[in-house]
Image (tube, rainbow, N blue to C red):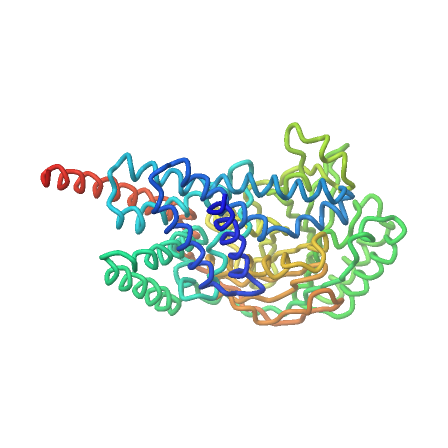
Length: 501
């Protein structure tokens, strides 16, 4: 129990490696602790439990802000909300358990030497377990370890292998620290230095290039309180707020957050959308704003609507929905009925959707949680006849109060820019509204929990990074090759041991 408690504390400490703290070396140290402890175990069961405890602490600390959504805004009693977070942590811990448990099992099965176990098998299986967490049961990839390295030397690898590949490299650095206690310490030290140096050098490569002329943008942050956002008593004031913010000044692109207009168009004043379209025509501005769209009885989508100065309309429907918040998993209707979440059973949009043409640029939106799935954004870019040159995230994180969810989400958007070499614009209800360039650097940002408009000039980027071309397939292929090399290493080690006897 003491070992499990220490593993859980080490996992929980990793939250400080992510935004807003940014102590990324701490993550490498906590993973080194896990790998050292796993390496001390001859029992697969004990190694599995250690990974489970570590993953539990990692997940509960990294995603504790979900309690606010469930309790304060979802209406779930505090004990049940805390229980739900604990159960989520136990589920998330399964993936850490798979990493250490399977690694220990393979160590015994393949007769692996300690160097192969630490420098190949553990880091690879850690990364594969995080990749699995990103898609099993629709996935929940929040605080995947690679996100902590958007500003570390390892960030240079992001356009090649994406966030899960960065997770493997961070785990490999952790394994190098463990190997400092072994005879191969000089090799491990050299490998650690090589990874950091190579990552730093890769940052100098220009994977994408400027496309067309820059566009002027205005990104709106209304800071509407979550307990007011969907109440009829506040609808008129919200509509007036965003109408005024949108029409306050022209720009090539004016973007408003997720569900900035919180009701279906059928329930709006008759001239509301027409007045916004009229402003677009008069000012030469392109408008994009979040709004739910109704396509039939109980068929609605969380969407982004667009209006061009020509009068042409645009629509993007969110396709990766949040379980329990935007769709009801089978068998969990009873849980959803205990809470008060509006628009909780959406229809999914198409996997690949067209971008919105804004002068020389093509703007591809993603809605809130969608930008946590880099492989889906990469698919949209490589499958498009005309790939987007600018990404736009519209979000409403007011569900999570004044928590680390906002800086964590900004860090996720920065990773998408690193992977794709494209700027990411963020228009959010209460933060973080920001402009991120194609290198993942935040060039401008509004203060969270304030009302305001962020004006900037943005240069679109074209071209394909390796990650856009291959998504996670390159990372998975390298992982398969690494495990193959580990198997060969085990056979060689076993033959040498037999000869020695």
